[in-house]
Length: 275
Image (cartoon, rainbow, N blue to C red; front, side, top):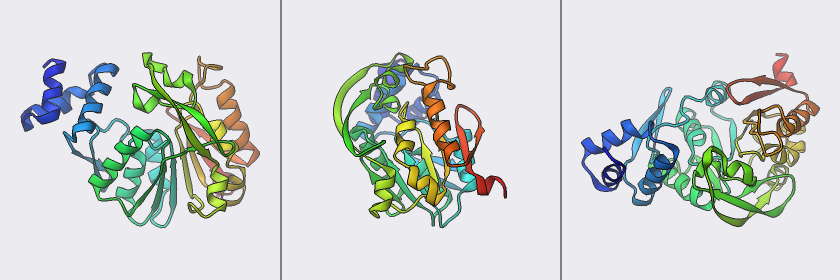
């Protein structure tokens, strides 16, 4: 099945052809997959159910690309029904949707700065019937309230306030626009979001800035933190360069124990680590 045939199947083909698309999508090169995914969202083509332990959600993602993430498992293991989860860098919603599916009484705040990705996230939330469970904030989080250039990547999940990260995996920047940035501390202090019990951060090289704007939240509310310390242009060889060092320094300043895993860290407040 060629790429044109794949696209026709997504946009309006038979259920058999659609199933073939889903089987083949995970093996496509990045460029082909993201092109196919964009068309599927645009035309609201294939909508599938994704399993999450005892629950499920629906989305227009062609396959469950992050449903087996070690970091997601760590979050679900620690999350309870009355908890608040703040998903920073929600993208199309795998983490936010998974929490809402698995913990119906939990509150979820999904923060995503890319307007086009917010549209995809909103489509998945509506398709899953989670409008009353997931609050969407179309902003960025950083060290201070401001407006920053946001680099939109043709691989949408790489879009970032850091241009280097938007061009990883041979991706390219397809647009730049100013996006409003707030601090987590400010949102919590103003009552715009509840104090988080769980803070997930996947922001393509901007994690240190997010935590710089969260000192009071870390000190006072002691959320579990789940973070992907992406490399930046300063430390592209591995995840032990300046970005990761900066993230670690902030967490250790607030007495967090860091548990490394598959390209990510689970960070446990000292009182919980000692329990």
